Length: 351
Image 1 (cartoon, rainbow, N blue to C red):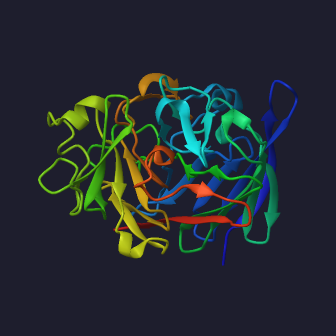
Image 2 (image 1 turned 90 degrees about the horizontal axis):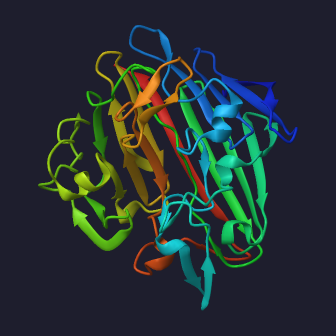
């Protein structure tokens, strides 16, 4: 069985638009809170080995903080998750120029990205269904894009996110959720003691603006090898040029191509003190591992404590960054008459 879903008012934007919050709660006490603004996952309460529940995602206490946020806490990320070089790409011989919101590149869909709009929300049986229509030309992207994102929480402590999209013109698309996780609990300090496993043999090399060079490098013999569980902080201070460029981990891991399109294990993280375990399963070809390198203390969390570098990790299931400018990468082109579909599951347990 899936969780019960409660609906309540959350606040209003400056223009008067109402924002709602939805609480999904299962029989065991696990719960997830999602708001219609940005489809943001604002809280996710899961139990440790002692049976106590804690919120394991970073977030804010007020709607106004989410409006001002530039770090995409818990948000649906699109039209294009990750960076696009030079804020431009060419499709079918036509060049499209995008909002340059991470000079000299575009990131996460632009200024008015999917995490900055109010989604239409409906409770459909066991799922919270969020929908949004992105107009042709929004942030520079072609095509009228109709998107649906469905959140489902099951009694076995799985939070599933299903993405669907269609377009009336050829376009590019890359969707994910940008939740920041700390399995010890929000505001509890850094995640360097968490033990992580990432089921990938290779990762993308990036330049000094975090754009993929096109090189796909094996993880073997590098600090980026998480094929066997190890502490997130074990190698984070090694002087590897890719770590130095981004001040921690912020790598795109390439998942095995022989299972492309199938729901399979991409990563597992365990927090030793609480015993909480999170598994990430996805149909996507890659997963972005990020250690909150840009958290500087200027974000005041829901618990009243400032978030600092390393206080969370992200595991963003997605396609490769800058794919529209790399024909050798898996395609992110969506054409009329076809449908984009993707599923990611966050499975929680304790041991």
